[in-house]
Amino acid sequence: MKKVAESPASPARGAGPARWQDQLRAAYRSLDALRALWPGLRPTPAMREAERRFPLAVTPYYASLVRRPDASDPIFAQCVPAAGELLAAPWASRDPLAEVPFSPLPRLVRRYPDRAVLLACDACACRCRHCFRKRVSARGGPAVSDAELAEVARFLRANPSIDDVLVSGGDPLLLPDARVAAILAALRSVPSVRVVRFATRLPATLPMRFTRALVRLLRPARGGPAVFASVHFNHPRELTPLATEACARLVDAGIPVQSQTVLLRGVNDDPDTMEALCRGLYHRRVRPYYLFQTDLAEGIEHLRTPLATGLAIMERLRARLSGPAIPNFCLDPPGEGGKIELSPDYVVERRPGATLLRNGGGGRFLYPDPVPCPAPPDGV
Ligand SMILES: *Cc1c(COP(=O)(O)O)cnc(C)c1O
Image (tube, rainbow, N blue to C red):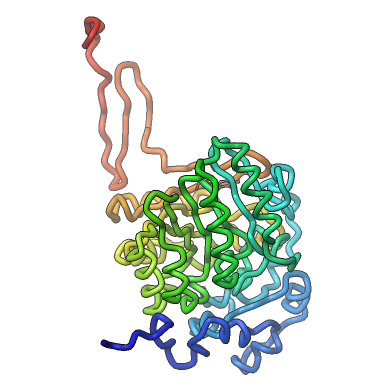
């Protein structure tokens, strides 16, 4: 029998170690460390101040995707501190989605009757410069304990209307396999939990994490809750052979994979890039699920786009892509509002008896209301 490598494939030359634990050990954790990789990098005092406020971490693998080590590179812009992080916008918040006041337990956020978010750990493989939960990654606290998991299970049993638990953090799949197994076991012990969604950026930043052992552990058991992966790709260049293999292993194991992309200025805020990303995800059986407007969180104002940018991109995606390749464009308003979906407005004018519509190609169509007719008889 052919011997199967434990990691998906060997990383490309220069991408660092093949084992995920070694990638984490070799991660770059300062601008000075990155200068060893990119001798041309010249950190400015503002970049150093941004690094002090929002610490940096980059895996060798993710750093190897950078082609030009400056802010015009879409990978560099997502992982290297920038002067723009010091911009003080009046609306910038540490907790833009008001998660803290909506936490019935320290580890649990509940905004909807039927869904809850479990914050399993604080750590991530890469610290995304656009993270809206910097308050969590900066905390650097311990992973969820067995006692906390028991408390979460107790809460879920007492609130059976919650049928869907999103496991997030930090990145929950950065935890050792045994901890991931403990989280799953706790959630599977609650009969009313029918879906478990793991939110993870690791297919983009540390794809060698998706070992056969991890995927076997995540695989849904017959009769047990469905398991989904909510991954996070922002640029087509992140769709490497290793990332492709990580996603394929998940889908092959019966774990639907969907991507939550963040719209970022200078990274993916043009229609060509977004179309290529969504198309690339779709070809890999990854469903583009959300395109998120950047949140009003501290330290990310320089990456935010006007709403018009996202709406123009959505119009282009609708005109060019297959339906399942088109994400939902959403924003989280400040505070407790929950997600709001936005879409281009195709209604030009409402007239008596008809609506004037346009399509993405500039055509106009008058669509009539039904001809007045008697109500249908009973029973039809
Ligand atoms: C985004 C979010 C969810 C999940 O929303 P879906 O639209 O179901 O993906 C659940 N809880 C909170 C607090 C959220 O922010």
